Length: 225
Image (cartoon, rainbow, N blue to C red; front, side):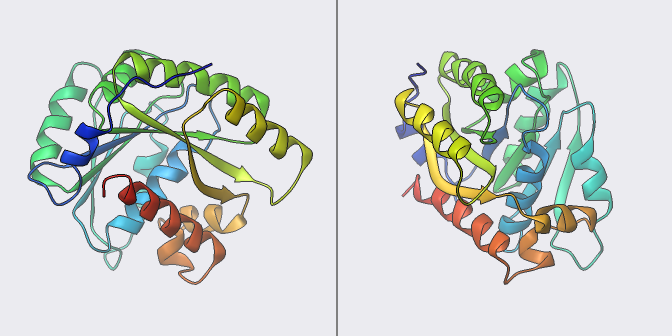
């Protein structure tokens, strides 16, 4: 059972529109859960109206390669790449100049991931409807709790229905995982948009996937109301 100890008060005080950026670290110690896609799509969604920066501390640098594919007509998003002791300092710099900073962290609990979680206002944990993803999320949530960071689980690449999805949802509820209501489906639109250096809100703005990301963004914002 994972119980979050972090306070909701601090997260409300530092939300978008304040003097400092709101930092969201996307973290999950299991690879392939969809961290990078989640960070890219939220960044593209918010960049239409806010100053957004990305911090890629994942050694695979997939988020950086996505950013390199973006065209001059895409909404502006700043990218930074650091590792080690520079993570905390870079977060401080980005906080001063942007409204939102999204951090793509490594797929394991190492020093960089701990620093990114420690520096976050919100930790997002993508979980696919599988037991290994769910088990891996426990470690990430425990670390967020130890650092007194607010964390939320996002169901990712979910089928509309299915026994496995229902079982994972049941286990999440039984284990008191702090879940968001918004769910991201297993849609080819996410992969197509990523390959074009875009988010789904840019690539296919009227698609179901774009509506999912917009709904997730609104739910995150509503946490701070």
